Amino acid sequence: MRKALVCAVAVGILGLVSRAFVTAQVPRTTFLADKNGDVNVDGLVDMSDAIYLLQFLYLGGPRPWPLHCEPDNALANGDVNGSLDIDIADPVYILNWQFSGGPPPVEACP
Ligand SMILES: [Ca+2]
Ligand SMILES: [Ca+2]
Image (cartoon, rainbow, N blue to C red):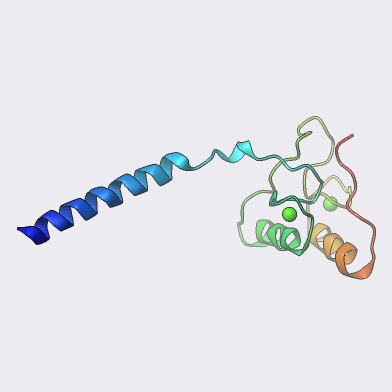
C-alpha cells in the first residue's frame, strides 16, 4: 500500500514537472541576434557559430536565429561574407576571422 502511494506521488510529480517544462519552452521566434554571424544568439560571434552553421548546412541542424533587423535587411544572419547566401564559405569566413586575422563579418543591420 505504501509503495503504491509513493509510486502514485512520483508519477504525479513527474507529470507536473514535464507539463511545466513543456509550457516553459519559449517559441523559437522570440530570440533575435544583434550581430551578423551570432547564429546561436549567445551574444558572441565565435567558433560555436561556425559549428552551428556547419550543422545547419550539412547535418539538418536548426536554421540560424534571425537578426533583429530581419526581414528588412538584405542579408540573413549567418551570411557573414555578404554573398546573399549561406554556404560553406560562411563558417570558414568566421574561422578565418577568429584565427587567421581575416575580415570581420559583414554588418547586416543598418
Ligand atoms: Ca554566437
Ligand atoms: Ca555567404
